[in-house]
Every structure is written in C-alpha cells, then in structure tokens.
Amino acid sequence: MTRKISNKAYEAELTRLQIELVKLQEWVKHTGHRVAIVFEGRDAAGKGGTIKRITEAMNPRVCQVVALPAPTERQQTQWYLQRYVEHLPAAGEIIIFDRSWYNRAGVERVMGFCTDEEYKEFMRSCPEFERMLVRSGIQLVKYWFSVSDEEQERRFQKRLTDPTKQWKLSPMDLESRKRWVDYSKAKDDMFSHTDIKQAPWYVVNSDVKKHARLNCINHLLSLIPYEDVPREPVVLDERPPQRGYVRPPMSDQTFVPEAHGTLMA
Image (cartoon, rainbow, N blue to C red; front, side, top):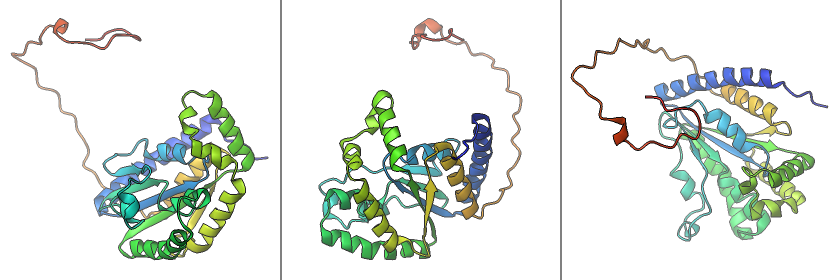
C-alpha cells in the first residue's frame, strides 16, 4: 500500500516547486521559449487540481489555461485542429490545454460524436501535426492522468455530496462510468498512434492526488532547461508626504456589507 505524504510535507514541497515554476516562468518570458502542455485522462483523474497548483503562483499573462467548450456549429465545419491552433503559445508563453485535440480520440470516439473516417483521419494527422509544432520550436508536453476504476468511483461518489463539486458530474461523466472498458481501449489505441518520439506521452499515476501533483510538477520542471534570470533588486523608496489632499467623506462611498471582520479606514 502506498504511504501517503503528510500534509506538512506536501505543503512544503509544493511551495518549493511553485517557487521553481516562477523561475521557469521568468526564464520563458526572458528567452521567448514556447511551451504547450496537454493534460488528458479520465474524468476525476485529478487534472484540474494539478493545473491549479501549477498556475497558482504564476503570471496569467505568461501561463494561460485553455479549456475549450463544445465546438460551435461553424467550428464543426472547420478543419478539426483549427480551433486549437489559435491558442498555441507565442514567444514567452506557456499554454496549458485542459483537455485538447485528443477529445477526438477519447470522448468523441467512445460516445460516437465523430465518424469512423473522422477518427481515422485524426489518428493519421495528429502525429504529423505535433511533429510540425515541435519543428516550429514549440515544446510540446503531454500528460495522461491514470486513475483506477475504484478510485474514480470513490471520487464520483464524493462529488454527489459536495455542493462545490456537483457541477463536475455532467451527463458525460455519468455516461463514462458505464464505458470504462471502451475508454480504456480508446486510450490504448490513441497511445499506439500518438506516443511519438518528438512528443511522447507521460503517464501520471493519480490515485493519490497529492502525489500526482508533486510528481507531475517535478517532472515538468525537469523537461525545460530553465535557469535563474538576473533581476534588478527592487527597492521601495519612502513614500512622499501627501500634501494638499483631503479625502472625501467615507459616507459618500458605498461599501460592501461587513459580514466578516470590521471596517478599516
């Protein structure tokens, strides 16, 4: 049985890793490096929690999360990969795809939202598409979050009683519970076609969420050759005295009701 990390050790290690992520961010911004990170996996596998810990301390202008909704009627008539291309990183950007073009190889395949020909064309074109991205200078990192049947079911059951997580139980999630084997087959087929040398799949064991987060972040940091970027020290000068300014009465302002704490001037 896996020995779980203590909360204290987890928080300490997460803080250390988040400091390194900020260093990575500054290096990416300074060098113009481009990074695209794909997060895929089963429902309730822990992708969202890991993404939140990665972005928590980072500048949203440098590190952005892309979680696209279902395609519009117009987008359904476009080249399948077209709507993802516009979100690819420019110089000095990190783009995290919370689910990606691999929807076609997963949910669309299993749920019958695409035709067999569309699916086969994706499997043919996806590896070439990703090789093109890498040749263009984009560093593409792909993570698959692997969760056991038992742990996924436990998380689904927990969502039933947690008002803050019930929105995560979509009709698609409920249907996926019935199609575990179908999703497993789809994932295996997807790996057989798209686990390429230029952009391999990295599998994250996510039965223990805290372990998955730390392992994924640590691995991501190991893939990018970042280093400290020299910065001029920031000095806060003394604020000059505010002469000749009289604040308007506080009674002229509309304050949010103080449900907690006391009003401070």
